Amino acid sequence: MNTIRRYVTNDDPAILGIIRRAFAGFPWHEILSEEEVQGRWQKIKNRRGFACLVAVINSGVVGFSCWDAPTLDELVEERGLKLAQLFKATVETGYELVWERELVVDPAFQGQGLGKQLRQAFFVAMNRSSHPVLVLTRMREDNFPTLIIARRLGFRQTGIKISSSQKPDLFHEYWFWITTQKEHDHG
Image (tube, rainbow, N blue to C red; front, top):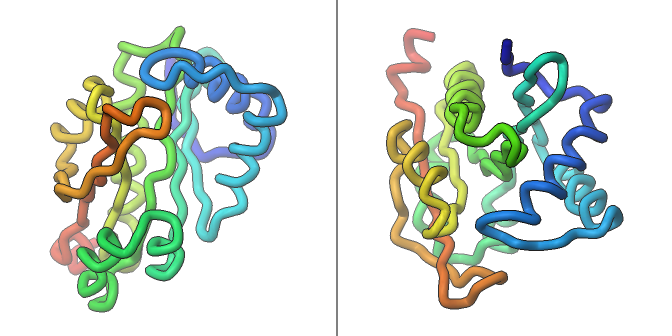
């Protein structure tokens, strides 16, 4: 049986293994050292507003979805002025800015709908916010399973693309999802 639950620090060893295995395969093909994996995870956990959900099968963590809440200035610093300008007015009218940082499923458990379940649980968490939420993320154009899930669940493309650091001839595109005020007026 699988469940989605909130992350606890005891999940760290499982998450580190998932990161290592997932990034070794498609679409990244990166062989990461223990130090690189730990450094990436620590950097994610240290971000403002860090939160995380984990997918669990038979009491083992097999996937995770994590996000944070950058300021507009932090968004400019990390992602550039163009993206921040596109959504500046939305944030200034009271929307909480959330960056969906990672959604990763262990390769041994991919294709079972866990990515979709994690993203749906993430949306439930966003809809529980006391404010409307603007979610931003980026996805690589050749990561078709992720793109399909994102479209089906309502993410929309911004039209802003950047070259992939792993393969400069491939692009990451920024995507967004916005809760509606109606969800918060009646929630």
